[in-house]
Amino acid sequence: MRTQHLNFIACAVAVLAVCSLSSAQVTKYQEDENLGMEAHVGKLTGHAKDAATNYRRYCAGCHGDLGDGEGENAVWLDPKPRNFTLATFKCRSTPSGSLPTDEDLYNTVGRGLESSNMPSWNPLSDQARADLVAYVKHFSDRWKTEKSGAVIEIPPEPAVNAERIKAGQALFQKLECWKCHGVEGRANGPSADTLTDDQNRPIKPFNFHDQTKFKCGAEDRDLYRIFMTGLDGTPMPSFSDNVKPDEAWDLVFYLRTLQPMHTQEKEIAKQLGLKPINPNAPAPAAAPAAPNAAPTTQPQSNENKPQ
Amino acid sequence: MKKQAWYQGLAIFSAALTLIFVFVMSQREVKAAPASGAGITGTIKLEGTAPHQRPIDMSKEPACAAVHKANPVTTEKVVAGSGGGLKNVVVYISEGLSGSAENEVASSKPIWDQKGCQYIPHVMGLNPNQHFEVTNSDPTSHNIHPMPKPGGPNHEWNKSQPSGAPPIDNTWQAPEVAIHVKCNIHPWMSGYMVVVKGPYGVSDDSGSFKIENVPPGSYTLTAWQETLGTQTQKITVAAGKPATADFTFKAK
Image (cartoon, rainbow over all chains, first blue to last red; front, side, top):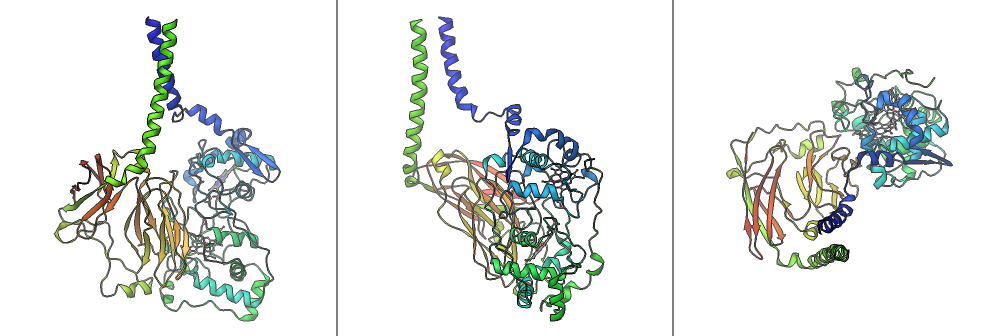
């Protein structure tokens, strides 16, 4: 009789157990399951479980064993290493607020992030980098419940001409890039001093005169992608909702005239005698604090590069 | 042995019965809930003197400064009207809603306007998956940058909206009290989207709020204010009978 009662209880418990299993938080189980994360880049398939050693050796010092951006070196760094558990990324080919593609992360890991301590990991093999991308993803469950955003397509680059550069300058004015980047792109716009990132740390807009390379890639296509998608986690917004592909190229050409290196665009601007447009109303406000506010570029650290 | 099998059968049978019951109930309520709904009304009061609200200097955006020349604006962290009514408090049902009432999504599409370099409204209630529209009535660009809790179910985004650009239509997928919205170009701009399940109300200039279509039942009501925090109280709503609930926040 007793065992029969027990049997009944066991049955009931089993029913309850099945019901609650879905909400159970078994951390060990989840960690193992997350290590099954993959990354797909071209023909490569990255496996998180194969990157554990490399991650600990090359990345954990900054990004932390738990991927929370709290590695032992993090206190010394500005900007701070990315917290992978939050799954917010600057360099994406996808709309603001969505996950980047595996390829975006793969390119970032290969390229490194200019003006930060994040080095290029090109010395590692392609497979090792693809594995590391999967490992970066395994820190956030967002990758299990959500797909990467729809890639913002970039049409082929048209030929540059004077008309396009002038149109690009008008856009720089109309879209008010200058509010942050300054009328000449010197990172001294009226809002520049007040900008903070999503951790409430001060952040400088990009200075087009000082810097030749962008964090998210140096090519014309990269520049196109940067302002169309924005840099999530920073004040740099996305413009894809309101800028047509043709206009985006005009803007790329104009931005190239601001940079220090010699470009075809710069040559055309010189012939045109292109002057920065003075935004008629608030122009004087930008003047006083500006010149000494130039951002300091941080030297790239090689300490953590693989030997 | 025979008895054991009987007990097992009983257990499985009762489990199945429970499942069927739950299923039927959930189907039934979808249609039943809104019909007999009643409203909850009330007033939010502020006790004590409202903290000083700092005047906002918009001189860096002349177009907006001009709009407010006659009536300079201040921060809106605590907005108390005449008679101590507290504005911009979101009142919602935090406990007691049935599954179907909880998951109903308001059909209205509220507008979050950027006007005179301020957010109008300053505080907006929303259901998860309820659409809202961000508009720009200003002659200047804004970047609309809602910042949900990092790592949570809702995700930060940051979009530029130049003058004259079409509205941005969006939703939040999960409840969150509250999502701070800012504009990086105009650092004084600040507002909150409060995403809650079920019916909600937001207090007006006089501190009055109204929650419509509450199915009969016993609930916990929560009132949220951006700097004064939350308060709760129990309330019972009878079919077709309006209920009232008042809240008092103490000035800090």
